[in-house]
Image 1 (cartoon, rainbow, N blue to C red):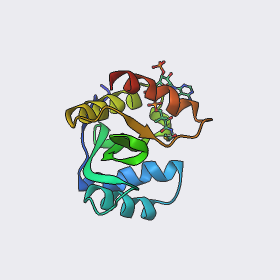
Image 2 (image 1 turned 90 degrees about the vertical axis):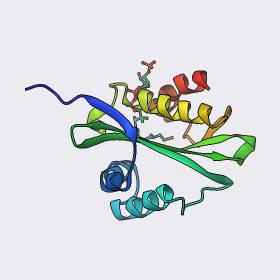
Image 3 (image 1 turned 135 degrees about the vertical axis):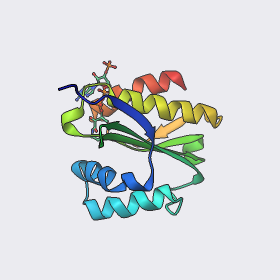
Image 4 (image 1 turned 180 degrees about the vertical axis):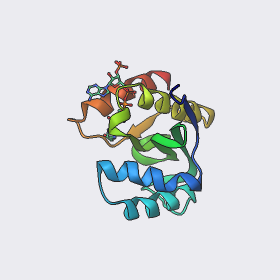
Amino acid sequence: MEKDKLLYRQAGDGDIPQMAEIRAGDWGTEPYWRERIRQYLGAGLHPRESLPSRAVFVGVEGDRIVGLIAGHLTRRFGCDGELEWISVRPECRKRGVAAELFNLLAEWFVAQGARSVCVDVEPSNLAARRSMRGTAQRI
Ligand SMILES: CC(C)(COP(=O)(O)OP(=O)(O)OC[C@H]1O[C@@H](n2cnc3c(N)ncnc32)[C@H](O)[C@@H]1OP(=O)(O)O)[C@@H](O)C(=O)NCCC(=O)NCCS
């Protein structure tokens, strides 16, 4: 049987349950993330010093979401953009999903005129830091 191809697109409200499931795998609960993501998509959630423009992309294999990325314009730390969330399902990691999601968000930031982007990441989170390198180079 042929494996479903990975596709990338903007997220919509119908993706919220699966996105919440993925985020809750890293931290928190699904109800918490369903509400938080719903508010973020609807611009009802305002991360510190954020501006209204925001983008959320998902990687999709068949009807399963394998990863998500979210970012917005900001004035935080003197930056133009902020990466809000990135998560890939554990069983789908190390296949370049995060790198592709970072590229999409980087293109969106560039299209918005954002040239400097900040992200809150644990220094010990090597996976996240390595997968962000390409994006940093693109912007
Ligand atoms: C961080 C995360 C999104 C990476 O997703 P991924 O799809 O596995 O990443 P990719 O396959 O695109 O890998 C991109 C790069 O990171 C590297 N990388 C991925 N996982 C790694 C790990 N555990 N340790 C070291 N490097 C890693 C890859 O080797 C690749 O490097 P390369 O371009 O030099 O080959 C994923 O591990 C995740 O969801 N973690 C939990 C949530 C999280 O920590 N989010 C970030 C908080 S800011």
